[in-house]
Image (cartoon, rainbow, N blue to C red; front, top):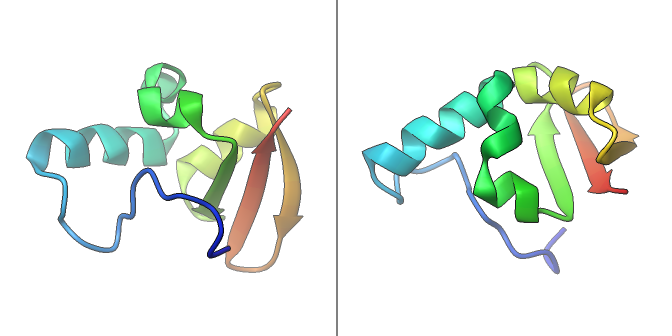
Length: 78
């Protein structure tokens, strides 16, 4: 997906502790994910299927599952 801009890339600590903590909360799929400004602007979300956000987005009417394999899933904003 090289043509899509990245809001947060969790592979490296590039953003500082405050943003990292917010991202981790969103990644876990807790209620705070609904308030995440980066997720609220996202048109596409690529997430591991083991993350809580995967399960949350499956129930979120703002997003639809467009692809998944055994490792990851892609959601698009409706």
